[in-house]
Image (tube, rainbow, N blue to C red; front, side, top):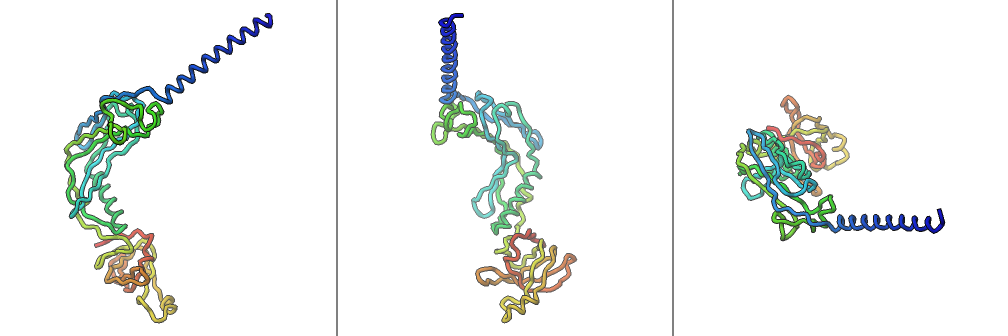
Length: 284
C-alpha cells in the first residue's frame, strides 16, 4: 500500500475517533446539564390491615429517584405543647423500591417501647416528662430530597419539574397521608424520676450500677482522716436521697443505703461526680 493511501486511511480513522469523542462529550454534557425530569404525580398510598400498614408510592417519577420514607406517630408532653415523634420506619430508598406495597409493623407494643426508651434517655439528662395527648393517626410520608445521587437531577434538583414539585423554598416533592389507628400510651403515663446525677430527686431511691464511695460527713474538719474512712457502696445496692447540698458547685446527696435484699446497711454522703457514667435506675 502506498504511503499516500496509508496516510489517507489513518486520517479517516482519526476523523472517526474525533466524531466519537464529540458524541461522548455531547452525551456527558447532556447528562451533566440534564434534560428535564418531569414528575406530575407523587402520591403515598397506605392501607392498614390489623397491626400492619402497607405502603407504596404512585408516581410518574423514574425508578432511580431517591426518596426518604417515614412511618411515625406524634405525641405531646403533658402540661405544655412540646411535641415528639417516633418512627416505626425511617429509610432512604428509591421510587423503584416502593412501587409495590411494602409491609410495616405498627404494633402498639413497638411504639410504647420507643416512647419508654426516649423518656428514660431524657430522664438521665434531667429532662424527664410525662406523655399527655397522643395523636390517633399514623403518618406516612415520602420526600424527594434536594441532594439526589443521580446527577441527571442537576444541582439541588434544578432539572426536576412538574406539578408535584414545590416551586417555593427547596425544590423537593413531599407527600403525606394519615390513617386513624389509636394507641394506648401505657409507656408514657407514669412519672419517671430524673436520673441525671446532677439533679436527683429528693425522697427517690436509685440503684447504682458501679461501686460508689460513701463519705461519713459532708465537710469534715480533717479531710485526710475522712478519706481513710471512706466506705464503698457495692454495685446493685440502692441509695435513697434524703437531702442535697452543694460544695464547689457540685451537688452532694445525703443518702440511706440498702442492700439487694432491702436491708438497711448505713448512710452517708455521695458526691454527684461519683455517679457520672453510671446507669442509675429509679426504684420504688
